[in-house]
Length: 189
View (cartoon, rainbow, N blue to C red):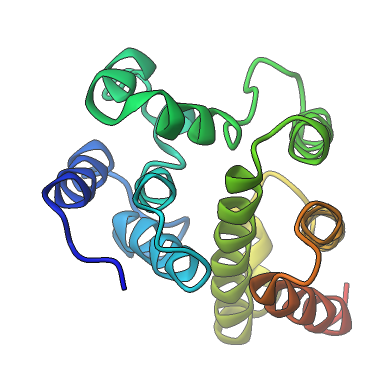
């Protein structure tokens, strides 16, 4: 059982401070709640402190590099945490949603550390849980929040699940993700 070490506490604080001004799309829920949820899901698969820290910081280099840059992450949490986070960071220099999605999937499938794949699964599982909950409350108005269509989102979650199954066969979190992706596909579109 993983204990709440000073290093993990520092990562919790870092995540909260780095994302203090962010909320989940359209919901008003503080973004840090998502980061904590991803860490919780990852903790069901591993007690590795570096992986739990990377789960907390998984969006930091993508969303707030000006607040918490890679050099600071390396200095405070080490190369392994930073490489895991980099394995989850989308290339925002690519044009369009589909090209970024394709590049992310290719990287996750062929080059990212296995720990990055685990965190990606937990991240997408929590995202999809939120989407299904919000869709039940909002209906199709939900799609106004996104830069992609429902069909693109359905494809995205199915592809993430496919890549995770290839990289980490039989992962229980991925079984949950695959089940929710199926539910999402049956919900219409």
